[in-house]
Length: 510
Image (cartoon, rainbow, N blue to C red; front, side, top):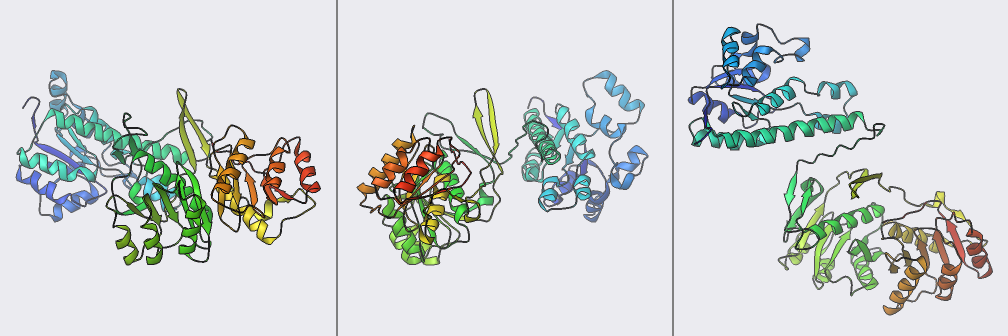
């Protein structure tokens, strides 16, 4: 095999030792000379295997509380020397530098330490210096050295050296170099993002090491990938693999339902990232039935989500509907079995995982980054713009509609009544068109809009929308306010016994 190299020596210095034992034993069986440091050296000794301390090579002990152990020319010379370079070979002999064919090194758990809420000094101590330097050196010199930089590669590396009696191909060495630079670049990105948490340096570093190839992208002729830790968000109980479009809808569903965490049972049905039905009721069954009533046509092939566990009776009703995905915090045993009755239906248990605080999307030849819209309109922040004020029931409906409006594509109008979505106008080029679309849709599904409320994602520059809403029977309106012509809409409401509240917050969603 061209470029094959026989392993004769190895430097092992790792934080994570799970799965390391079989590799050490195999290297020993192959007659490989092993060098090590600190806790790893003790681990190897405890296996009954001989190991040469790095201090014996460098003539320096581990110093500065362990901050400096391997940072020495004899270590890095052993890794970086070019074995086909006569000058390098002479200097290796001149300075008594041992050849190091394998470097098995991982990094201190910086990200986990940050996530744990540790003190800054503890976080700083988890910035690896020696480890990252060893990984980069070994990966750079992949022609002569193989670098194993993660415990995730232990099993594969053990297979390689076992099947080939300690010989490693150039192809494998280069593959492991790529893995090593993936590890080092991700590590440095995490450290930079920690130091730049206030975004004072306008530089974007995104690194996701969990990647999955999807069947295709938005359409079959497009390639698609998902980069992220899906398993941290969900336990998948059943169904086919999620598609690119499924994932977009699941993301929209999760963000919408987060508005109703800890509230009464709330059920939503989404299609193409927008809610086509949502209701809040005393029971999850009633919430589902009234969400479905919002648009039973669009619900076909939709994404279903609720903020509470799904019971048997609700599962029986859901099972009558063709839907792609059902998401809930839990499913009863009986409900799970019922919903598994369709082999492709995807069932997800949503975990309490933290979502990113920023959104990122490509734009032109770059990317746009912004803070996520975590603002939820509340009673304490609204102002009453009209003489007539909404009653308690209307106020609850206004805030309910506002939450839905925030997660619906602009321009949008949302109509709601008794904590049920009656209809919405989504993604229209004018707010008047969005309102007319919503009214037509609500009438089509035989909703009585008398006493309903209206939410808008942005202000009304003219009184036309409140007039159209009034003629449809709508009594109360919630909108951001802020137009120089706000008074026109306020005057219409005052003259026609309507109430209107301002939130002061626009919720565009482009």
